[in-house]
Image (cartoon, rainbow, N blue to C red; front, top):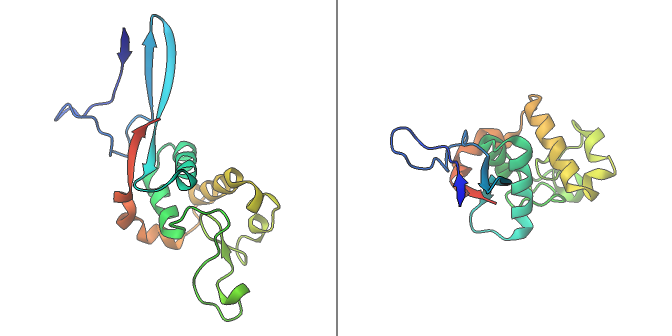
Length: 157
């Protein structure tokens, strides 16, 4: 027999899977054996190439939908090596010198972009994005995040 605990809405007894404050883990037990599975955000209608990074960002941020939607607004492909598409006549390739999941601009985040781990370790890069986000870095995507909320849904992993 399994015992599963969910956070439910007191008004409707429905699972609050789209509530960013939803408890991120579900604990199950089977005859005293504790198993734990996570509830993390996933992005709708994309492949595992993006999903793995969405889950990781969801995990490190405690399911912070604002953070995920900010990253989506910055880099909708969730590609760790993506360069900005914004035109800049003096930038590399004629584009703005911004890179990665959260589009760190080299002028303001040279220590991160020039670190050898930036392009070789996507988890490290996402950790740096979250650290900067929580530390008050102003990301362009933060002001456009709300239109991306509907691209994410909580899912039991």
